[in-house]
Amino acid sequence: MQKSLVTALATLTTLTGTAYADVTPSDTSESNTNSGWFATVDKTLEEQPHWVCPVVTVFPQLVEEFRYDEIVQNKVGGTTLTNNGGGVRGLELIPSEHVEILIGQPGYMNLQTPKTTISGWTDETLLMKYRFLAANEEHGNYIVSGFMGVSLPTGNTPFTQNATVTTPTLAVGKGWGTRSQGVAIMSTFSESFASGNQNYLGEPTVWNTAFQGHFSNYFWPEIETSVTHWKGGPLSGKDQLIVTYGINFGRITLEGRNKLTLGIAYQTANMSGFSTFGSGWIATSRLLF
Image (cartoon, rainbow, N blue to C red; front, side, top):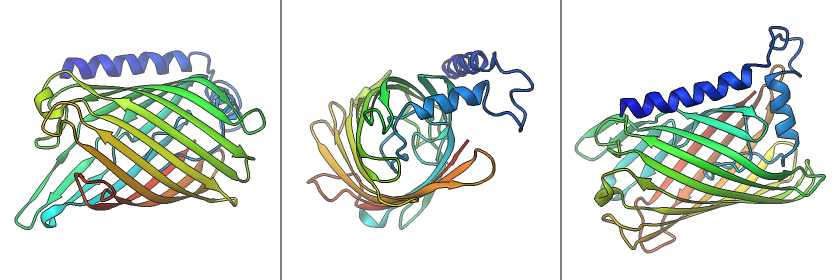
């Protein structure tokens, strides 16, 4: 486990170092943020649609930000699960024009039952995005990307998967309208493969779709669906549909190039015959830079 973590972090360090190689001291001064690293970021952002990140669905676009989520799920029998930090969330960086890397922030979980409370950290996650095709609102308003995610078994019992899990993902998006108003559909399809513990984890496939609107400067209402199908493991053959109703507020200008996006959403998993929880709430905050 430690060897896998060191190898993954070394790869990310090499990528980041390569991206920084062309940045001189003058490039990083407050008076010149349009060269070096930030020039690459700005060029990358300009070449793709300017939608905001959905609350649940992983963004097809490349983005440079730090994201933090709070998730509360109500389960059967009066059990509540709180995730402080969220899932695939954390520090997202754009080291080159078509590439984004994400260094996940493990969530801190609290599982409250009528009799006891169990707490601990989840597994570390790493993600790399590669943008195959993209066009901004003036040139087609679409995007096609691929992700490769890795979850490392660094968490506490019972919140670790006890195996390295690899998740390849295809992500697409299409929008209609302008930068100031319009609608967009974003969708991702993924399948997870565990290095061990398959009898417990199985191989879930997940299809997420976000339907997002933009009708004023700062309001982005959305409806998202998430369909999970399990192959193998104790949930083999089962399907779950989660519907999320949310709204994002942003991008709110702070100081310099920094912007803030906030979001809140309500989830229900009672749309299908099977569900791992009943309902829940998500609050999200994202600092873009």
